[in-house]
Length: 115
Image 1 (cartoon, helix red, strand yellow):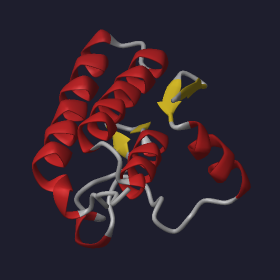
Image 2: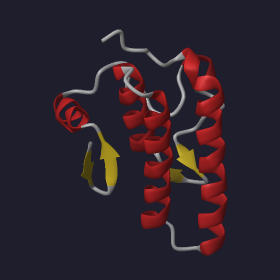
Image 3: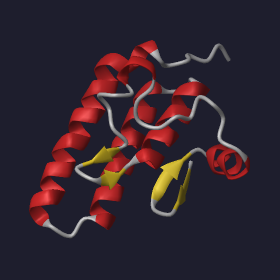
Image 4: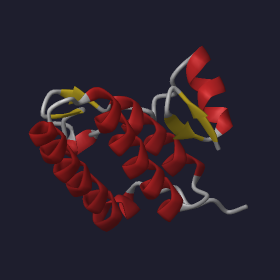
């Protein structure tokens, strides 16, 4: 894992996405969830946190770790880019909703590694 621009991701993520983003890295919602899962929390773009989560799910190594990194990255974005305490609280609350949603329903998208 490597921290870059205050976000945590596997080292390979930073190398791969610097060249080209694979099709499985598609932001916060995809397919049937695209319309109901925006890439923002009350106007704050969190798409990079979602892209890192997509990448970790595609690797298929550790679903719990992927979900925890997702939450940590969302909280980092909120902490760094939100000045209003009220808005910060609302955004964190929504981040936890995203986190629990992927914990409950993300198993359909996790590509469990066979190695």
